[in-house]
Amino acid sequence: MRKPHFTGSQIVAVFIAWYIVLLSCPSPAQQDPIDRDFAEFLLGMDVVVDGTLVSADFVTHHAIGGCGMETSPTPATEMRVRVSSVVFGSADDSTIVVSTLGHSQFPNSALRPGAHVIAWGGRECTDSWRLWGNAVVVAASGDIGGDYNSERLFLRDQPRDRPMQYSALIASLATMRSRHSSHIYAGMQAVAVVRVREIQRISRGHFAYLCDSLGWVMGAGQSTPHRIVVNEGNLVCEWARVGDSLLMPVAKVPTDPMILPGCSAALLIKDGFAPGLGVPLTLLPHALKIGTAGLEVRPVISRE
Image 1: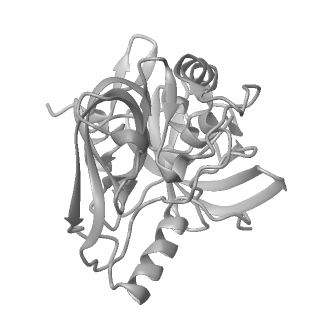
Image 2: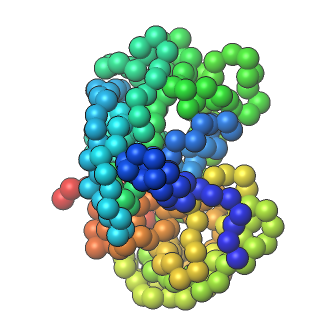
């Protein structure tokens, strides 16, 4: 049974179709205005970084294509961000490029080189896994401001009649870290590939993948769980369909079902690629490493 909301690649597909019809310019961006708890919104992203803006250029973006889709040039703002720290996920490099649809409109020219930013993105299959997303600017006072897509930013339990504060956002993200889908790899022993045989709806924001094992891709374990229970709640996340393949991190002593406290996006496999980790399956160790306590997600993908 499919979940009733549209997220991630579905939103991307809607924008692509809309642009093909109107402008013959598909957009692989998540451009919906943010009108929800900002920290929860960021939990659904493949990558979230804290960093410094190097440049922001309005360009005609030539998507590389992928997933069987041909794309046309589209107007976009390309933001180059030097990463100070990785909040969620695994960054492609110490400097990343995040594209957003159209001309980013920040008040008072806030988006300028040297600005302190929080940037986020999802890896888009129709653009050869480039990051599409956006950023907000952190002022010297700690106030956070975004473009017109982020005018209604707020944090739960924080005053909505004043600008959101950087310290409050970072504190909120820290408490939510275990709910980001990439966190499920922490401390695990091995990674298997499974195929979704059935999806069972349990309640709103609560469902289960019933899976069949296809083998190991990193390390090996005793067995693979056959059921993944996802407690997504009110998060907006990518989700799998029947027939899709998933990565399944497996503990030294597996539990069945495996419980996910948030999104399952970092488990998804698309065209042999793991967008939540930023690498093809054949290069999985470049995004994951085996430490003394088990698997760890590399904050920056290894090039070695």
